[in-house]
Every structure is written in structure tokens, then in C-alpha cells.
Amino acid sequence: MQTGKLVVLGSINADHILNVKQFPLPGETVIGKQYKVAFGGKGANQAVAAGRSGADITFIACVGADDIGERIRQQLVTDRIDTQPIEAIPGNTTGVALIFVNEDGENVIGIDAGANAAVTPDYLRRYQQTVIDADALLMQLESPLETVIAAAKLAKQHQTQVILNPAPACELPDDLLAMVDMITPNETEAQRLTGIAINNDDDAARAAKVLHDKGISRVIITLGSRGVWLSEQGDGGKLVPGFKVKAVDTIAAGDTFNGALVTALLEGKAISEAVRFAHAAAAIAVTRPGAQPSVPWREEIDTFLQHQG
Image (cartoon, rainbow, N blue to C red; front, side, top):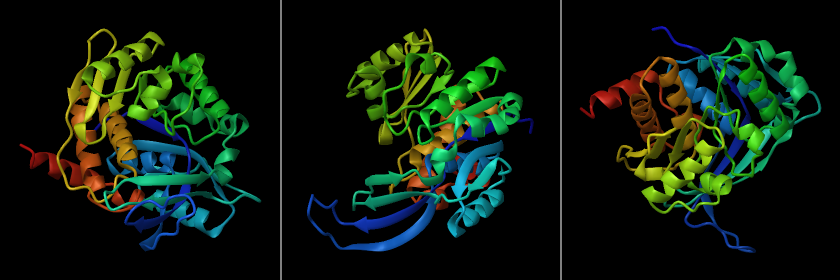
């Protein structure tokens, strides 16, 4: 199958995950279980989702000069990712995320950037040809913002489509948003960018319009178990429901959705079909624990969709 080239610029973390009955209150100690270390980071999760779902993908990122960084790099190769632009940074540790998961499958997360902070505009310049040659650039916000802006600028100059998953939520300058072709916020992130709290479809449509007015032609607001609000400039938007499954945890569900979505678009699928493909990938991911271990392979997504009729 002919597929466009994807480059992901983003973070790599080692996720330390602990299951708890409920999240601890300040000063409280709770007993957890099933502690594990899994490979994560929004950039890496999205890269793995793209690689496993069939994309032609290169990943620009950094790890620390430590054992876990080397193990993560080796794992990414088995996930069908070109890891040449992933360097181990001397004197740095690989990024870390500390994650509590409650009995409802919700999570709270604290992050130390570690080597992710070394993905600077200078670092990007070393690998700028991969962005220039790509058909699409997918980014998140766990890398330095100045690098995200520099990469968007570079992509724009060379007709590489810019896709931004604006997570974790933060304020973003309008000059960055004006360079974005497609944005994929969740409700919290959309509210941070637009000032509109999303409680229903009308709110989602209004938030999407604000983002369109900033120059973004395609807006996809992820709404958890409800699905996504899909809006293209001038079309008014619509709700595209997801698939009903029993969630174990929602870690990396959004990342899986993003990686699979871009993969499908680069294969030439129509946007509604690409969203359905991405919904299927995310639905499989939430039925499994952890970040990257939960991300499905292409064969699994295709099989899941066949069973949906």
C-alpha cells in the first residue's frame, strides 16, 4: 500500500505505574498494587501507535545516557520506527512519568522531562531533512515549545502537513496555531485554547469555530467515551461516536488515537474513515493496561473493524 511519510517529534518517558483504589488526598498514603514500569511519553506512544498501525515513520526524540533509554530505543525499532534521530544525551536521565491509576481506570500523572528537554531547536536542525521530506509532522507539548514552533515553521515552509495534539494542556501562541493544519485536543485542552467549557455538542462546535478562526482547517476534539467532535473549516462539525468497550485504563488512549488517525490519513483514507480506524485502535488500547504495551498492531485493528460490521 502506498503511504505518505510521517515524522513524529516528541517525548520519551519511562512510566512508573501504580494501581490504587482511589487517588491519595494530600498527606494521605494509600496502598497500591500491580506496580510496573512501562515505556511511555506522548511522542513515543504516538510514534508506536503509528508504527504498529502501518505508518512509514521516523521519530525525532532524546533519551538519557542510561540503561532504560537504550532499552526503549531497542523496543522502538521492533515497533517499525526509524529511530536514527533518537540520541542518548550524556549527563541526562530518560524522562519519567509517575502514574496512579484508580479503580475506574482514570489516571493522574506527574512528569520529569529529563532528556526530553534536550530536543531543542538546535537538535531539530540536525534532523531537519526528515521534516522537509515528510508528508506529515505530528507533535505534542512534552517537548520544548520553542522546538514545536520551529518544527511547525520548517514543515510549513516545505509543504509538510502539521498535526498538533496540544497535550498536556497549556496556552499556545496564535502564531503557532496559525501554522497548524489539524489539531486534536481533548475537552480540557480545547477549553484552555478557546476559553469554552465543552459540556455538549454546541460547545464543541463553538470551540472548533474559535480554532478554525485561528487558521486551523481541521479540528478533532476528543470526548473520551463519547467519541470525537470532527469539524472541518466551514462544515459545522459532527459527533463521530467511538466503540463501546470495557476500559481497564485510559493511559495512552488519546495517543493511540492520534498515531492511528495520522496513519490512516497518510494512506489516503477519507477523514471519517480515518477517525473510525483511530477509534478502533483506541478502543483496543483501553482494554489493556499500560501505555505502549496496550497499543494494538494493524492486524488487530483490521480484525476489530471487521467484527463491527
